[in-house]
Amino acid sequence: MHGWGGSSESFTELREALKGSDIKILTPDLPGFGNEPEPKEPWTTDNYADWVENWLRQSGKWKVENGKLMLLGHSHGGRIAIKMLVRFPLSTFHFPLPSHFFLCASAGIRHPRHFKRIFGLTLAKTGKTLLKVPGLKSLEPLGKKFLYRLVRVHDYEQASPIMRQTMINVTKEDLRPLLSTITVPTDIFWGEDDGMTPVSDAHVMHKEIAGSTLHLYKGVRHRVHRDKAREIAEVIRKRTAL
Image (cartoon, rainbow, N blue to C red; front, side, top):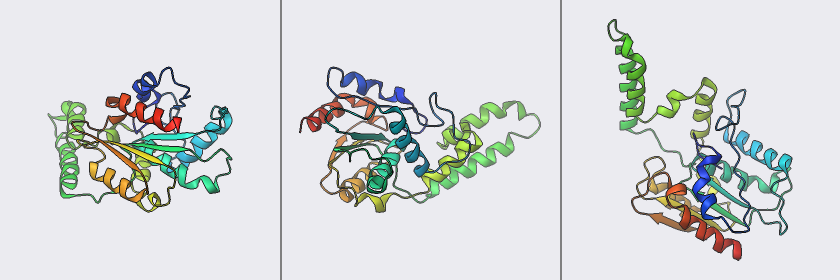
């Protein structure tokens, strides 16, 4: 499952790295991204988990000869995967419990809004007001893009009203309490220079998910699933062979 703003294309490198294996990769476009229409109303992480389960049920693509199913999620997709995994015992979709779990720079740990973030949002709002002053209005479209990029809320600025509220809904939920309930063997992949989901989140998830294995990569940012696709694929191959 891909991250916010991504699509099935996000796993191009991983598909290439796993070429020739017996692993069947399922990468749907999540609602609101890629070729999949956005939901008709704001969603929560549970709504996304429901959708993925229904997608698997309707497509039947999850059925394989040995019955093994593995879950992998990047960023927002990791958040959804966590929800899916902890709901398996209560799920109405009777597919097999995943044999392995992979998290790539997963979202799910909520952080309080720190001073820099508050200052940035205030700056953006102030800048938008200034750009409405006569004589500066013609610069408004370009100026807004610059200001939102400056404070790293460009995804929010670009989103539709429904997806903006969806972003608020999914990011306000802290999944930390769920991590200790995960019993499936888990590998966690993270870039040490990740500015979207800080590496401190990786250590939290590693600590809370009993028996998990943490893989850290120097000089890698949030694109760990793409920049380290070969390394991730190698781990997946090993886990599949067990």
